[in-house]
Image 1 (cartoon, rainbow over the protein chains, first blue to last red):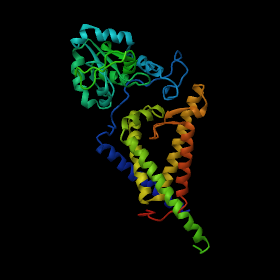
Image 2: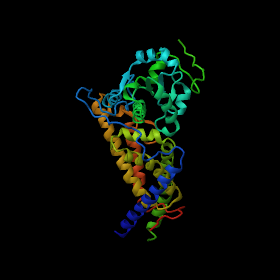
Image 3: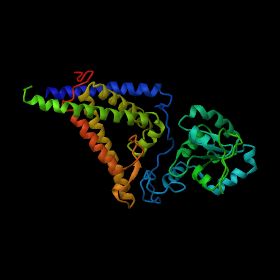
Image 4: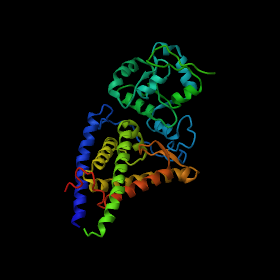
Length: 209
Length: 162
């Protein structure tokens, strides 16, 4: 009995010291999470009667091919009152002359590395998990734009939704905001132009037609 | 200890020492793989739908990976071995329950064999087949429960703290 008490006490000690060290490590780490940040802003997805009977965590089963955009992502877009664009509308917006004047803006909601590997030409990088790095630049461009199209990977990725909600919370009117749920995966699959490296680097990825 | 039980105890010292090191190394590896990619881990934790509270979600994702590394280091160094082993046994039991629950949800939603279900459970080893994962966790639970036995005190900095 005494031995059991000792083990329990030791476990409590390990937990307390471990928790203190773990949170310290998170603060020190350059990749650490900001505990107060809401990385998934907006209303959480709740099942709808019209929605297909799949779990909201659909897409996690990677045995099956991912569709261009996951049902749970579409539901989150809808329930948060955001506007959805499909690939045809995204292409139309991309070729619109207002894109050249930055009146139509594309915003890439993936991380820095993925962005540099290939993004929609002239898209702004906005990694919603590190808003402090990117929000100011994107906001100044988005405030003067007429339309802002946010995208990420496509499939079950909903970082574009989170990024759009963050932009809306920061003051961009909802009617300006669009989510391209098909994302870069669909864009590349359709052999549309992809820029590599920095924004406006002019380096386009070679596409094998 | 009687002389009769001493050979038996000695025979168990080395396997228990190896179990302690194997478990410690496994936790350091999986903990670091999550700690170095906290955003990816946060997304995976979110998929379990345990909570909608963003603060709680962040706390879990920030705490768990480094705590695993800490426990792994304690085992390797041989500090507070039984207290650490108890925590790991409880944690592994909880994780196994959560992973199994999610696998069941997928199984009931999609018409595929249970063992063909493959997903990234946030365990630090990427995408895995569910049956492999459950078996792996079962072995880890056995190892950590075995460390509670009191064997394997060799090469420990401080086996007990209290």
